[in-house]
Amino acid sequence: MIYLNISKIKINLKINDIFKKYPLKDVEIDGIKKSIKKYGFKSENPIVLNQNYEIVKGHHRVQIAKELKMVKVPCIIKQYKDINDMKIDAIRDNIDRRNINTYSQVELRSELGIIEEMRKEANERKRLGGKLKGRVNLPKASKGRISEKIAEQIGSSDKTVRNAIEVIKKADEETKEKLRSDEESIHSVYKEVKYLERKQERAEKIQDAIKEAGRVKVSPKIDKHIHNCDLIDFKPKYKYHLVIADPPWNVSESNSIIMERKGTTNITRDFGKWDYFKNDEEFLNTSNMWLKHLYKLSADDSSIYWFCSVKYLSYFINMMLNIGWKYKNTIVWHKTNPVFDVSTNYLDSLEFIIYATKGSPIFNGKGEHNFYESSIVMGNERIKDKNDDALNLAQKPINLVEKIINCSTVKHQFVLDAFSGTGSVSVVSGKMKRNWDAVELNKKSCKYIRQRLISM
Image (tube, rainbow, N blue to C red):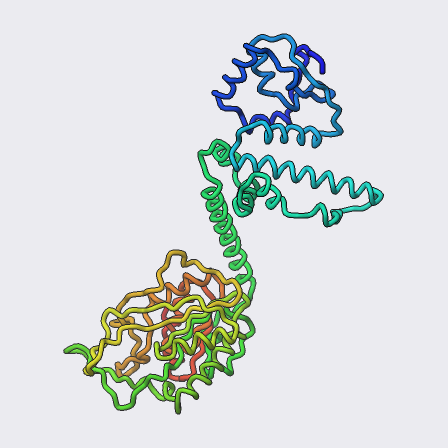
């Protein structure tokens, strides 16, 4: 140890950065100042300098000594190999001698762990001849997650330490300052970091999806996208990011009439030949074939919305799971003006839509409820044939279709309007700048779908 003139002591900027991040509180500085005034510098706790007289340990005491106009202070001169050697000493000094919070402990100890791992890797490289390029596989004894070691050292949970390390990597310096001073908690900042990360990932995913879909060349001719065929026979050249399917429900009743409110037209519950099956087994087997085919037609990251009766809801969910779809939710459409049924029963005012996914598709519906409320299609929105009869009793409202397309696609992506009916999905897709294809077995319906699209 030597007593060195304080004017010869220098600052190393890289070491000083560590010192500045964890300043002592005013009360702590006052305590040190009073102790030095009364007892002077303790020789058993000298300032530690490197060979260039730069401070490694003792920044606060040097600062106080200058304020007290001291001329000389006790110092130890150490020979350091490099800046990392100096950092290890400085960090350990902060860890051992300072009353710092959990975040600061993790920040210091994780930097120390990284430096030590780098040192071990350098030593291993040297042991192997120093000619290897790239990373060196360290011996098993030196491996182990830094977070686990730190958690054990400071008596905190591994999860808290892992969250803190994530924050260290991704938070800005202003936020880190608040964490060091206890103005913010690790938990709250971690949640914010992950939220912003997911938001950024989602924005990038959307942009990538728009670019990818925009590269596919699609015919501008409407007739090329209206397919008058059975769904099973439909074999397109590309895959779909969204399938909206309103298939037969197997709920028709022959010779049945549902009476609407006074002054309106009677509506039958007989939807047509396409909604009749010999029995439930035939209906479910056919539906299973459709769902399998739609799975093949769907892109790796895609969604499906499948309209169905509550009677078969659980059957379809199990079917989809067995095929490979991931069941996400069931959306309920509540009709505010259901038809009046003369039978002694509750009004039939609900329709169910199974929402399932394949891979990790786009979802823009954060905060959306799985409940939609609107009237059944009426007035000018209802598509009618030349006899002024409803073309399709199951026609869905435009607003509902818009909501689905907006939640599960971005511009230029491909939408399959399966069991197209009146073509509402295709119409909305076109207006929202999505690529679309309509598949409809009924020739008459295809004619009206074409007319509707041409008049857009």
